Length: 264
Image 1: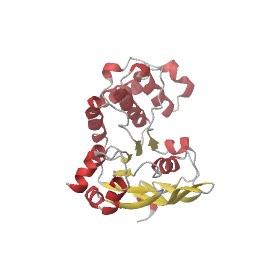
Image 2: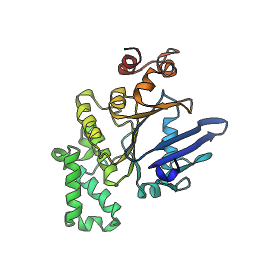
Image 3: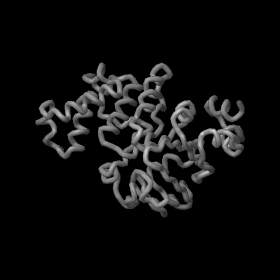
């Protein structure tokens, strides 16, 4: 299938830092509406790969196409403007703004208002309507006027994904969205992720196997910067190489669900 038929296509991406090869000849093709997970042990190269996709890093070799257009040399903001948006493993939020103010700023900037935003804050009905729709979708109405610094961590994660959707993505990269979220706040966040628009293409980078196996219909496993395999979740979980990567050589911290899937 040609690159133009994929929502996002990476071909033979390699990133070298001196003599260290962080990402080695990785290819990935996502069809529109894909629910794809990228997994692997710590140090597998997942973050480097995502940074290459989003333009934070330039590849040493390889190409990236977004909806058939070569974006390999585009900076981060131009990729975002074309519909490739990510969340971050560590929150990137405006601590002093409220969720309402944050979403208003993002939507206004997306619509080209720039510095004019604050003069029309509350006066532009379409912006207000979009803000409230996102606040409802991400269960933030009850905290919309609280400074972000005061929000529970789960709500901060929800706000970050709301910000990503305010950028109108067609391809969304979710980088460990439940990392650090307490168990008591996790179910709401998982439900929100599950309810994201079906037409949106999503690449999930995650260690939480509950989320991975409930969300993804396709998975890629990275090990030492290179792809080990790509398949459906059941095939991945039953592959002896994956079991060795996660459960062999004294590896610690494997989620119990993967062990259950592998051996249960």
